[in-house]
Image (cartoon, rainbow, N blue to C red):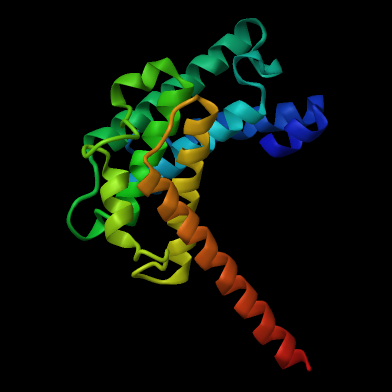
Length: 205
């Protein structure tokens, strides 16, 4: 719905987007229900809230006008803060401290770039403390192939790429190693897709 609004600027689309967000926030209170059972899901949900916010126009979005709009904005920002607090307080450990950890840290980083209210929970993009840097190195080989299935490659690549693009748009630079690893992952995915297309073409013949 946020993408549809960004393309059309339609008032009805804006209303439906608001209704869906209001419904989700109301139906999934902090810490309750299946959407809060996993920290990685919290990181992913944070990303979605950021993307929807930006596509809708940020603080200038039409559904934030007036007193009702101000209340809706407050609910949205409260939900973002709750997500950031949840993820930051319970980073994945042990066997989940790989793709899950990358998603959690990426969600915090992107949210921290967008909203000052989550700056305290933000994970810096540079240096050893960044769990994404450790996770990316552990999870992927030098040429970009995942140690797990290809679906995990796509899952983690989305998080790493979103964080990289968000950082660039804010004027922040990531390490050369980080950018090279993302480039290797993209190249591996491109080659895998081309091989799949070639195989499908031969089967059709």
